[in-house]
Image (cartoon, rainbow, N blue to C red; front, side, top):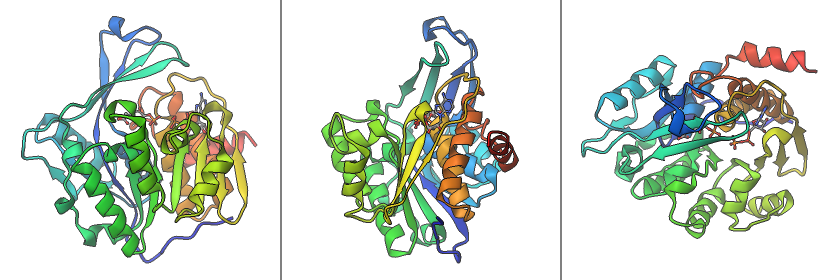
Amino acid sequence: MNYTFNIDKEFDLIAIGRACIDLNANEYNRPMEETMTFTKYVGGSPANVAIGSAKLGLKVGFIGKLADDQHGRFIESYMREAGVDTSNMIIDQEGHKTGLAFTEIKSPEECSILMYRDNVADLHLAPSELDEEYIKKSKILLVSGTALAKSPSREAVLKAVSLAKRNDVKVVFELDYRPYTWNSIEETSVYYSLVAEQSDILIGTRDEYNVMQNTAKGTNEETVRYLFKHSADLVVIKHGVEGSCAYAKSGAIFTAKSYKTKVLKTFGAGDSYASAFLYALVRGKGIESALKFGSASASIVVSKHSSSAAMPVAEEIEGLIAERV
Ligand SMILES: Nc1ncnc2c1ncn2[C@@H]1O[C@H](COP(=O)(O)OP(=O)(O)O)[C@@H](O)[C@H]1O
Ligand SMILES: O=C(O)C[C@@H](O)[C@H](O)C(=O)COP(=O)(O)O
């Protein structure tokens, strides 16, 4: 089953949200207290998705706010060189900082992230800094849930969603729930629901949909029943190593298994999944195939050290899918 986009748009995907720094532990299988060195990469979920999609060959843009410092300049030049259009990345003028994510790899199954996100530039993107003419040019506006955590970024995202909707741009909501940026689950649920009800496609884990629904134990059936009453016509629910499924409004359900690999760390799975899933969908490969692309890309990235720098090219994904039929 295919999903259709407005083919007259210049950009395939424009992401909105944070572009930050990941500092990934070089010493594995130990707690961060004992980690002495880290490697720097560009990070932040929507930036990772943008880089992954660009590497696959989509025409990608990014809307966000960067610190006016060495880290901000590193992020902008890395993303530009990765093929992402950075013309709508605003440079902060008020001294806000770049978000940092230190990663801990205690074991392949036990990874965690320590975030430094006080006063970060990305959450200071203001509604007045959006350009409707830019958003209008894209098939997809990819919204990261974390950008809804604080004002003025919250209002900027809500405005971007309404600009997308009035310009025939599909809204894709990546729930991307990071508890440390929110005051409470109640607060998250309010803003997640607001955007979810306006989104065409949603991508999240079972736990993230539970946060959206402010419930401890939601079911996929309840989630899609709620979302299909609103704008959604495709809902992707990820279940970690168990795989993922996509529910179409027509009633069709597609499932995909994960691709077994030698896992180095678990983070990066969701972002690589989203970038390859959307790539396949935009290229008209169909929903079932898009789930395989997402799963294969995630399998490649969890076996490598970084999230952004490890994003695969299409041939690697196709090779893995062909090898495992
Ligand atoms: N250990 C793993 N090995 C191989 N693939 C994995 C593994 N963990 C996750 N994946 C793949 O990545 C996808 C997204 O992972 P998941 O953990 O559900 O999302 P997130 O990273 O957003 O929490 C899964 O549907 C699966 O295909
Ligand atoms: O999103 C962040 O701020 C951190 C990411 O850059 C990091 O690479 C990561 O956690 C990715 O994990 P995922 O969202 O599970 O793909």
